Length: 323
Image (cartoon, rainbow, N blue to C red; front, side):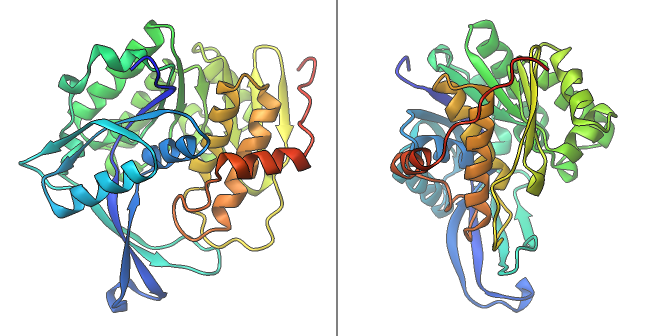
């Protein structure tokens, strides 16, 4: 496990995507893909050349075999993906959109194999990964996944490894908004880099201004807070500096799903390459812009060659000397 750059965990679902626009009830043709915010980021990092291990569980069914094959085809190390003979692989239906509006998504994940993960899946070898990327989705799936999330993030941080955390709020999965806010903020306290969206940060902290939202998590021990501002770009703050980084203009938005995951891929990959926060956020904005121009959750995530081409055409941003 010592050669693994990034460990990520969560649920990858099978996804049936409509081949025509309109109400899902009336669509007759679908194609099969995979979906899951955590595995989207894992795939994006693997495409950039990182050795990524994926911790998850699938059912002993055809969808589970499909998910495992798809993840392996993307280059993920799936030795920690187990098969559950008692519970099914989660799946979803997704509508087709061509105008940049949010697609209709229907989930069938309650009681899934991944939701039955618990602390027993932890292995000392997992702590050999250089970095852990986590989101707020697994802890919302079940009480056992919640415990797993806390234990894994605390253990990785205690082992001296870096941790990134995207709240990725899914209110419908939580028992209450109060529990969601409490647990997400507690998890963020175990992360080096916290990546909320602006609306998420406002809900979680009670502050309106990005700088104040960032200060909330810096006070909890984060090294940096990077806040997604949608079409306006992103803002980051550390103990020393803060800066707004403008968005990459997009003329034609096709599908907004996965934009935040693409942003995380850009930020985390750059920071693991020891680039500055300004350059990391600039890369995150670019990959996020690619995501919204592609139909699909992770189809727009670039390869290393595509990233190198982008870098050759764009000068990196300079980090300001002080806040």
